[in-house]
Image (cartoon, rainbow, N blue to C red):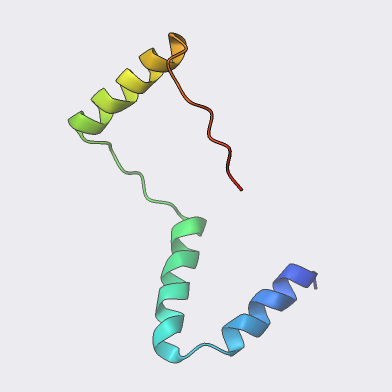
Length: 64
């Protein structure tokens, strides 16, 4: 068993039943992500973002 799997299982053992519901929902989500169609507003924002990027109008974020 991998180390990450062992750590996950140890963490799960410490959770309360009501907390496990959220974990199970997340596991289902990442195993079978549902297709979500963006709204018209989101589509327009994506288009604008791509146009801005092509023009070089963006900021590089320096994360942690």
